[in-house]
Image (cartoon, rainbow, N blue to C red):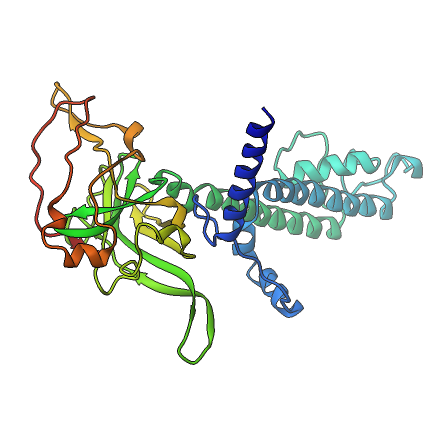
Length: 372
């Protein structure tokens, strides 16, 4: 039992170290912080206050919503109390019977606060009303009405903007937990699966990748987080993805690929991070969104292939089995990309995979992929 507990602790520490070392988490959040930022740059966040309010957490938005309304009610309540006091309307001032009030039935701080609330929210219960006796009270009424409308518009806009953020649409785009390297169409390829969990499409979708690693230039300069473009090929469409069912992204490992120098026994010893991006416009909201995920060497399986997940039921409908979305099986694969391209016939040693849960159908597989 002690050994089992020790093993779990070690696995947790390794997982925590991997999570802290990667730049982009599996759910697309960037693991980066900024230090030694000048004070003047912090002021720029206040200048761009709209973006700041839209991007802050919901707890702060709710707090700002409550504080802005209650604060404005209370501040204007104090002003109405001051006007009533200046005119001698308060009960402790004992106004005469023929006294003309600025606001009827405002006798203290509580009634002044209630009148401020009723004015800004346009409730108008009828118990308290403004008279024409005080010009300052009329001016204050106009100012509070305008400021209340501004607060209403601003807070409603912030809430609607946060609800309709494109990142919420990105939550319904999912990538496979691991990537695989295996032969495909006479090429050694790195494969990644991506699925759209909604039936509405992403219009104008584009997929690309970046390989992040530390490199040393011939001049001896160390470049941390050097970015290398990774091209992906997909089997759907020429310019736009028909993203109605899960797709398999394919990166051909040729001599121009950074994976060409890696092998099955050296892959997990490498230090890099493969970040995959998917961009598109939501069909229902016309908002552009970007989905990100990343793969580290420990999350890339050499010599494996994904299980099939698309089939046709007996009723003639197409069905996607998401239980096999990230499942892989071993297939015959070359030891390294160099071996694959130099050993004659090696790339023909592939293995078929059967999905026992569905009816088997023949689907024509095009010979050319589309580069996105």
